[in-house]
Image 1 (cartoon, rainbow, N blue to C red):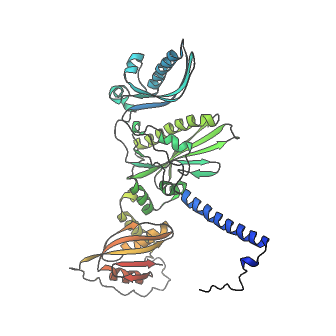
Image 2 (spheres, rainbow, N blue to C red; image 1 turned 180 degrees about the horizontal axis):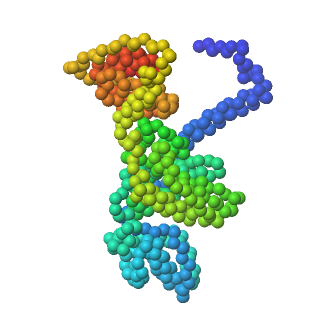
Image 3 (tube, one colour; image 1 turned 30 degrees about the vertical axis):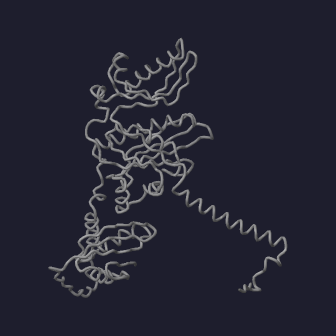
Length: 425
């Protein structure tokens, strides 16, 4: 079998040492670039990210209590430190004055965050968990009793060093919300772990989206009715120095502002303490908004396509010229009257419609056009791909032929046939 090399291609045998070296280094560079690209694509959904939230319990938990106790022995100092933590935790939840024995009887466990035990000294950061069945009669108003909100998807946005992130890395803001005892709040937080593909869907840019179709798809994946977006912005005076935090509570697909406050941390070691306290204060803002009726789910998200159809109808009515608005203008010729076809007894058919969706506005436009076709009984997206091709399933009287004819009359390009169509502008 003959093998011929074109004379236009330099043969490796005729190349000098410098040419061979350049060729090998060039090949190595190409392989390196390909490997880096593969690693970057793999890192979009993999890596050390995602913090699983604490399991919600019906107990009452208080975290972040610091104790510094001395006694005859380290064991005695530790026991005395736990009792002191129980007293402080009881005061934080608003409990009445009671003997330490009565308070200790309501404690189910003491959570050790950090501790140092010396010969005669005990320094620790502790958390105390009270049994709700026993302590609820004294602190029931603050233990999450009463009506709760609808499930609200939580997207904690952290802005630090000019970068906004959510689940791209394991940040202190995400960790503070993951460790928050959400069962003590009347706000029903839906806290994603942030692992896998969740870091691609839930990012800082998601809060700026306004498309209800997009939000309906995202919220449906987490069984949530609406969204809350707590934002933390950190400003470091110098590396290792004081940190100023500005915290803002927002909610809803329109990123509605609820409240804001600032806090300070002495340094990186003090940052977790500031984040934990900020989560409690942010939760207080959401509690107040719930009591004032501001955390109601947005009806435009859950109403399906009916709310969008009404909105488009109102927009068309406002934009269409009315008689008498411009008396000097020449009246246009009357459009031919199209008689409605008699579809009595005509069976409905299911049609799959593919449409390009470069952005959220394209999704809205395609859905509105298909739903406006006479005879369409329902249209819903079964596959949504922003920047690619989405698919909707349409149930219509007359099937694909009626849909294709109506969309072509509106200026759409329609290809395909049978039970599958593809439309584009």
